[in-house]
Image (cartoon, rainbow, N blue to C red; front, side):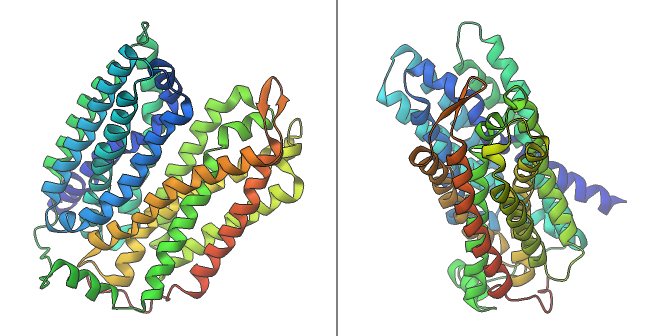
Length: 433
């Protein structure tokens, strides 16, 4: 009974507290327009704050993975401090920008605080509980990591209505006050998670001569091509997911559901979180977790081809069958996008063992960093350079442009499936814990 209690109190609950806090980075789109108007810049200029946050999430995870490996208490405390400080700093520079319209200092300050400082908190906060969960739930590693990573995915759905309420309460447009409130709330949540988080008492960290030697020796257990393939298919899955998700609202409007954008966005967030939990828990029943990636890519390819073949985005307005097909694609891609995240640490642990898993997982998250810079921008480039904007029910949309995005994501999903099938070495025997 004590062991069961500890795995939840020392593993699952603190992981949820950390991930449900840092996952709110995805809420940027809720208030980016209001921030842009308040400080006197375009929405496009403020969007870079989010892209930088994702980039530095991946890069901080890559460079600080050894710190997480060595001391989760220090790394989770760093996460709480930097995430909250970045949130509060963002609020300060929004306030400054509101009083000094078109100030470059305000815009750069937001980039530094929301992008760089919060990015450090995101990377260390994301990594810190993952290995601990896998150690507590050795027989259900996928379920455990899926639960925490699902918290990251569900954070937007949970926090969005709260943030919208806070925005509504700021009658004078003082949006910066919301960031001060959020900084305090999330610091408390993450600090409590930091205090609770602990590895099992019987776990002894393997002793390596040096950090670099430990990681390199671990990666050399298998042909390096397997690791490169895992990194690439992780990167491509995120790139495809972000490309479609970034255009999701406009695609929904394009098929005549402008009045349901909020509801569909919430449902897609549920699929994103459900994919993180469902696919990773499902993977526990397979000898080789790479099977789940094959399934994710096959489903994504099948629904993309179906929408392309029917011209679902271009012809969906008023056609119930095509509307359902396009929505199914959005939901499947969201689920696969989430499932790709939650399966990475357990797939890596099966291939390389638990000894240096935080460091290896951190390096792998660098794929997220680069995908954060390429996914949205790729889709925006295609939409702005192909097709034409037309009016559908009073909304300017580019049906051909959105449809063309699918040609690129289809090709990338096919490449990902080939990597998964032919270059990731099958698991013959699980690595010793």
